[in-house]
Length: 130
Image (cartoon, rainbow, N blue to C red; front, side):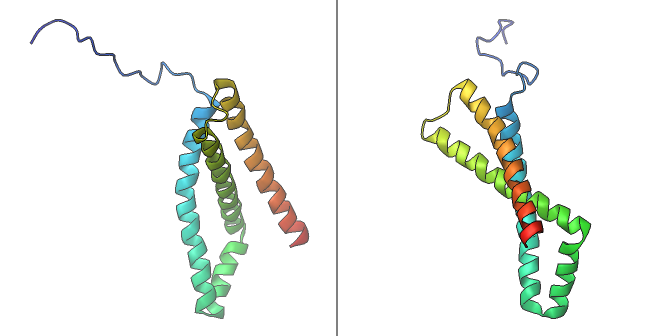
């Protein structure tokens, strides 16, 4: 072994990177993807309960009608919408659009704002008209 240092570049450490909105949206996109798995299992439970009879459906409906159930449904709705907007953002990048640093940062911020706004508007519509 030689004491000569390797000419290979070192892997950058997290302390070198500046936290950017695009990084945050990448992390949130992965988290919402995982949350959609759990939410889909709950959706399947509700569908199976509906097919199983009135008692099973009443149990599932009672859960989803509770405060905790409503919060879970709200979070699932937001995760679904946010993940959709994130997918659209990635699709635009794949097509070669909005890839400049400034535009991608604006688009990342727009993703979070749009997903929250659409989720709240959807839930307000359900509460008012549903």
